[in-house]
Image (cartoon, rainbow over all chains, first blue to last red):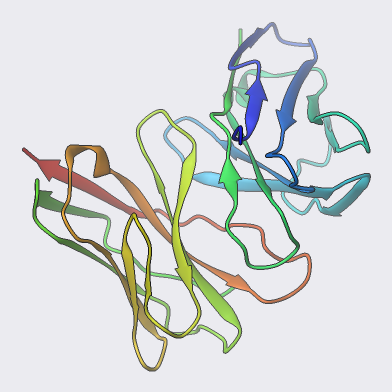
Amino acid sequence: NAGVMQNPRHLVRRRGQEARLRCSPMKGHSHVYWYRQLPEEGLKFMVYLQKENIIDESGMPKERFSAEFPKEGPSILRIQQVVRGDSAAYFCASSPFDGPYEQYFGPGTRLTVT
Amino acid sequence: DAKTTQPNSMESNEEEPVHLPCNHSTISGTDYIHWYRQLPSQGPEYVIHGLTSNVNNRMASLAIAEDRKSSTLILHRATLRDAAVYYCILIPLIQGAQKLVFGQGTRLTINP
């Protein structure tokens, strides 16, 4: 059973460009979470999605950031007009159920904004 | 969100047991106690979780105090690969509320 997959693993964008980060959850998992880890800082929750629904987006910046988890295909975290402060590691996790169950993390996408 | 308190760092020797403490004095009756770890340059990894009873799995054991105000993650025989930051996190039994709130964790160093 393949684990959580994220791509790309490394992404370089110039200021003002768009970044699209993809996350394929583990097979059978319909709950996806995105977390961000800024350099030398801790992990911060961004958004929790179920198929076609955003459940909790309390950690998402109000502008430029959006996330989706369509019925078919991977979850996408989209950052428009990136700035240097967006440089970070973005981790996706998945779980099979809604509840206090373990979350399985992907290897992350390391975004560098130049 | 109920808060947890962990030591910033701990050090142990290879092949010895390690006891990682976590205080959560404001825990509610339906909060689950989860432990995750993050190895250098990797994503977090689930370790173990429990509610009231002690739990064992292939990675570790979780000892939960009778009053649930503290818990201890036990690595029975540490290896160099166990060097990581360990996070103790409380997750409520509320639908849609299982985001992980990471504190500063405990940075565990294993000496060869």
